[in-house]
Length: 356
Length: 232
Ligand code: SF4
Ligand code: SF4
Ligand code: SF4
Image (cartoon, rainbow over all chains, first blue to last red; front, side, top):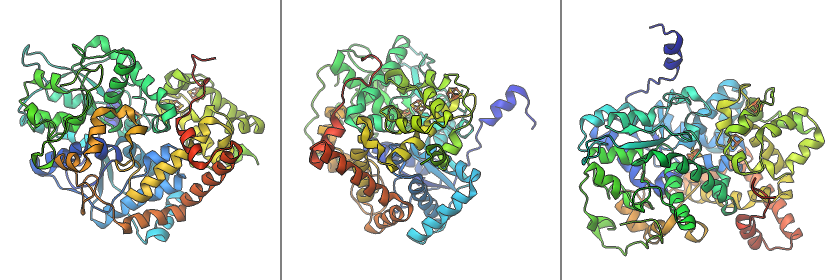
């Protein structure tokens, strides 16, 4: 089909994500703060939808955070990534799916830079050979894990046990979506919907019955800023940027936030706690915060997986207000159990932010 | 040394530096400019003059360390510049020349380098619960203090393969795989970078009359007044 005008512009931002056959790489942040999200991404894609997604135990970090904190040379970062490509090649896969936006940006930037400067790619191949005796094919397609959940959003909706609808009023729940900077700000045509109209998350919300909120600071960074969070002395930058976003979304009364990058849900969740401790202000109803979710967690809730298996108890902002609105059944007694249902001492409570 | 020529060897600079028309769009959307005394337009503009003294002053300044590398500016620049990429090249050069120890924000490269690369080379990941200390991260909240106090229990419950063999979240990374990462560092200048940062930081610590332990803690935690827009 030949597209013209707006249709042509829009077609540039549509991605034909391959349906199957993926080499999976994990995320430093997601596995540390949202380990169950990685588990349920695989459970949904593999067990529920029958997709082939392979993980090698030998893969590692992409080095993205160290790279964007300026602590490793570009060639080091590129060669670490080249090793991931080698593991993918050795396992017989052509498509790579990452669990992290920083990684997704990193892989994309590297492939684009090599395309422009082939001599650099040749040098990285040499580096990798010298260091590890490995060789690689470049991936035919790099996706972020959310691209796959987006692709399968309607299949998930067909199997939904709950919807993003307030069971008391019948109205769609109001959802803020936060895309994460490195998804499409650097290479807009690599993200679904581009930098202008990214729909990777809003598409999920629409399919699952919710309503996406548009607010002035929708595209503002969550405030991670790499060194601006990793160094204690700089965290004022990080919390100030999150604060700006919350002040901007507050008048729209969001019921929940869905996020793309594994960093964003951590910051949007934890800085609400810090703002409440520092100023006494909370952004949800009746002293609660606005619950923040990864897209895997929200997909898992829609599909009816157990809230505590999904790891929602390790958020600082209580998730129960959203569960109650959705009509999700949960057992408060199971919230803080350990492995094999062992009873653990409960976490301490924040001094201001309301929790269960 | 001609700093502009040196910057021009950096691929990020090649990608991110073209003619700047000083429109200020990058500054308008920049989350760092919002709070810090930081203006990406000015930085690109200074680099564009190719004035060696002015670029040297930048390399020794606080200002190049304020950027968060979010790349929001890349999307918006009408000339296809990437001020964030120019910043990456400036920082890289500042580190290579040892100029980073001249500024408070630049000196933070030391604790960052130690922590992140220590994690990569020992655990295979940039960030890892094994080295994530609640005292350094009170913002992670009482709930994460609880997770850290019950790592095996909680991570196990949530389906991670915590410190286990085979694939999975938070699995143990084998020594052979870590050795490959180390070999990559050796071959690509990563190891040399760690040594260089160590050398310049030791000299600075000595000059400031601090042990390396004190220097690490100080550079990680201390923020002097004057960095923010709402301060004099
Ligand atoms: S919005 Fe935040 S954590 Fe998320 S991509 Fe930007 S800097 Fe990364
Ligand atoms: S990359 Fe740096 S200069 Fe560009 S918008 Fe982000 S913080 Fe500002
Ligand atoms: S947006 Fe681009 S052209 Fe405008 S001031 Fe910034 S770098 Fe220069």
